[in-house]
Length: 374
Image (cartoon, rainbow, N blue to C red):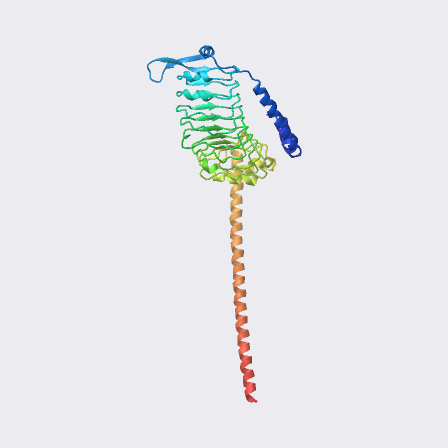
């Protein structure tokens, strides 16, 4: 994306409030037009002949007693129905991308399936009955609005980019224990709550509607997180449990102060950070101050830190630490003096009270003696 395109996007976002009503009407009209267009789509079921033409990769069957073709590529065929695939139970690699499919449930019969590509269709859900061996599944550029029904025990990588998902629900960390990469770019996510996947290593949630970082304590195995092009203004939310997190991309957000970077010190292995196109990146000594705040950093944005930068950051850090220690000592001395002064004042006050009591007693005795003399 060019700088001009990104600037146009930010400009459009800034003026959204003025035309909300009009935009809602336009969205409704767009949905209606799209619905009408979908209704006009003529049925085009997958035929046995087309399957036969596109089968490949002859392998032994699961029982080892015979051979069968295990790979099928039927992308870009304008297909609306793949029910016939229920009978091709030996398939392991299936590509049905760039069709007009609204339903892929017939794939439940392919119990040996390892890889599924279903990008660029009309799917509103990625739900499938549990596939015992499915490892990679891609569903980008559909109309999916839910993550329910994705619980395949061998799944390692799932791509749900460019859909309409607002919140992640139904992903069971115990069933998805092998999942290492979750892609949710360009959806409508407003929260990261619901992503309870302790073993996930790579999380891609760029270009959503996120305003804060949350749910990180449920992602202790995370190594990489992409949060680019959201609306995040604070670096609160990361967790001390994330001892493996090394790369954070926050480009194109709304982080306003470099002081926020100190909140990343709780991440012991943080190595690379991207903060370009945030307001804080315009502050003086941006690179140096970020390195002073996070001493483990090796790269900021696209550039690695040089030995000279590291040396300067170390010197400034030591100097500031010494100044803070001296300040703490001075403050302690001042507090000690204040306490001593308060103690002396208290003692003086108590002595004065004792003197007044004695004076009053002497006056009372003198009065009584005087009265007795009359």
